View 1 (cartoon, helix red, strand yellow):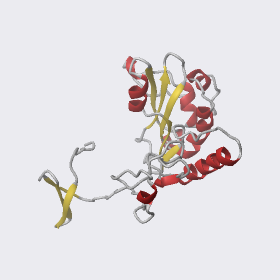
View 2 (cartoon, helix red, strand yellow; view 1 turned 120 degrees about the vertical axis):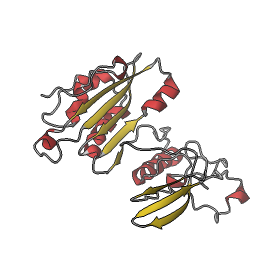
View 3 (cartoon, rainbow, N blue to C red; view 1 turned 180 degrees about the vertical axis):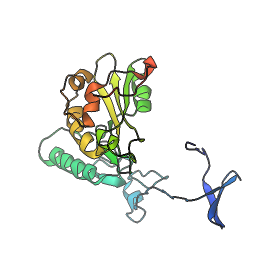
Length: 245
C-alpha cells in the first residue's frame, strides 16, 4: 500500500478507539492506526547555561548552539557534539570533532572536521547505510546537469536460500559528479549495512572516483560487491534489477 505522508501538520490528540488509535491532526483531519510511533528528536539542554549572558547565539527552535568549525558566535567559546546546531547526533562524530578541535587549538593542525562524509546506518530489519550526499542534496548543491545516479536492485545470496527472505530486495546507489567522476554519495539497503559502509567511508574520505569503485574486484558472493558492478544510470530509465552472477 505504500506510505502516506502528511505534510505541514502535527498530531494534536491520540484516542483509543477499540483496538485502533485515532490520531487527530492540527488541520482538523483524523485517521485510525494500529500503532503510533513518536519520534520527537532532540533539543539542546542549554537553557540553564546562561549563554545569553556571554552572547553565544542559540537556535531558538531547538536550543542548539550555532557554530562554524565548532566556534560559536563568541570566538573563545567552542561547542562539539549533539548540542551543536546541524551536527549529526552520533557519539563517534562528537569524539572525532573533539579530537580535531584539540589538534587545531593546541597541536598546530588546520584540519577541520568533515561533517559530510560520515558513515551512518539505520539498524532496521532491512538495514540502511549511507555516506556523503543524498541525491537531493547533490542536485541542490551541484546542479541537476552535473549529477548522475547509478543504481541497482539485488537479492542477497543469503536471502535467496530462504523462502521467507527471498522476496525482499536490496538496493544500492552511487551519486556521481558526471564531469569529474567523483563519488558524491553512496547509499545501500541490505544486510550488514554498517560493515559495508564503513569500508566505503575511507574511500570517500580519500575522494574516490566512480571508476575506482567499478575497477575494484569484488569479493564474491557479498552484497558490498554490488557497488563494483554498478552500470545502470537512473536517467537511462533502464531496468536496474541485478542479472545474477
